Length: 328
Image (tube, rainbow, N blue to C red):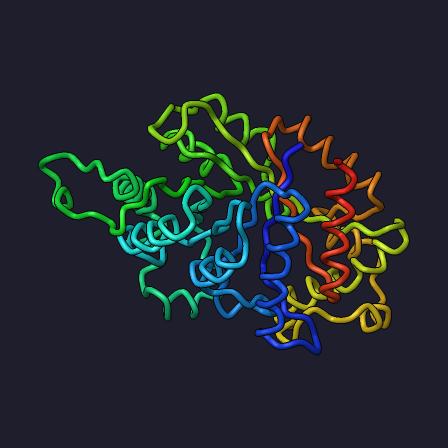
């Protein structure tokens, strides 16, 4: 089974943002070594304990320190930006790292309403106009505007020998239908959605229209996973993540992902723990690999992408190592 990584560059209590970002670079290099298909890094703005607002900057740094793994954004939040600038940026990355760049596009704000206003001042308008912006972006990537279009003579330079692969990221039937209409590959964020996963992915696959980039539908399911040598240890490691989720819900968590020791001081009631861990796969390698295989078969996806957040960067790497080894 194809496995990939989605990295949100979490900052743990006791660590600096620089250390968190360096841990992301180390994770990407380790992902390449372990045989993961691709490494994507997410975009967040003034979000508690998540350190990357600019995937394109991190990708240039990571690309220079890796050789073969596909790298990309998961995702660039297009409502904040003009399509031309996004195309230029990812054409530059694709020129530097030929055949390795994925351009994931999302429509989430990536932060608070105030952060969205500080970024673009017209986020909601950008959301409404996303289909048009996405179409414009694809034309810039292909360099194929019609002869009577305003941008017919504009090239998103440097134009790379191999174009970045466009993906649409989403959590609903609406995004699935848009990806299908545009002929884009589609990644569904299972870990952040309460929508019907099976229905969304079926909508995409059944209504997919071929495009210059893609002749057949192509899907990823992104799942939240914490794996350790034993189930007991995995649950212990996961406790710090669950506490952070609880803190974010309460408008806190800016200090970072708490330690396991701190999490042990917090008493989760049964209902609260069930709710917080509802979208999280926790277990030993056999348990986790079985769940991921079930996801792949249940939702009929081509690839599973794993996002793992722990207080200890060592525990995070270990989780990815155990999952990779379980599929060898």
